[in-house]
Image (cartoon, rainbow, N blue to C red; front, side, top):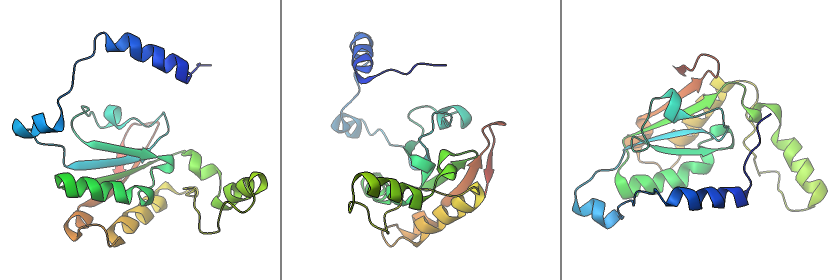
Length: 175
């Protein structure tokens, strides 16, 4: 069974890594050098088995990668809109993976657990990214949520695509 680092260990790793760190340019330096930014956002789950740098063969500078529980796009809309304003995005790629942990709980179950330990601090409208057992359906829902958002430019909404990722084959499949 693997062991995972705690915060103290992460800080220690940082200290060791910093001795070989390559300084990164400030945004003003990038702008002066006319360096462009990626224009594609990839949204995935935060599950450690889901690494788009591996299964999409990406370099760190290829895309903006945003992740959260379940890879749900709704909670990320404000972030994507801000990136679009600052940079001008061209495409959104939403990827949900098979065997996601969010398929094993319900929003109602999470609300009940929170209300048991902190009564009155969660509302019926609060969601916790549960998506049920059907990854294809949850991708379709997220693509529609993004496309229907009034905050999203219509041109960007039209260039929003959904996929599932198979943990066993490594393949993404368009939805």
